[in-house]
Image (cartoon, rainbow, N blue to C red):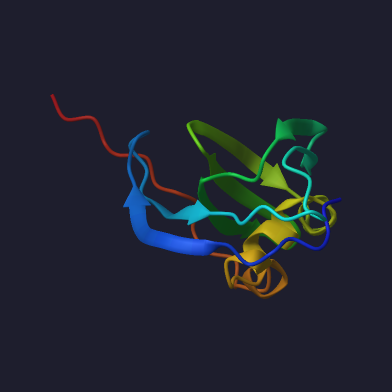
Length: 126
């Protein structure tokens, strides 16, 4: 897990719709320092790992789907990752926690949202 990220400069906040799903996102600038390695290992849920600098474009959408299940979409620069069902433990032990905290978010609080209806897929119209 990644700890101790500096607070980035938020260049802009926007909604990314590059994959047809609105996703709250940030454009970020990370300051480099002598104690901040430029490349890191970023451990994400379900054994997904990325090696590189912190994302310059980052977004996340978390939707509770049952008592301990969350649908999650992450924007990481030009890559979009999606999981239909992750557990609280999978999320809280990932690099998403310190990343979201660095931009002023609180993943543990987001996980306490009430379970709602799943994402609705658009109806096809003939």
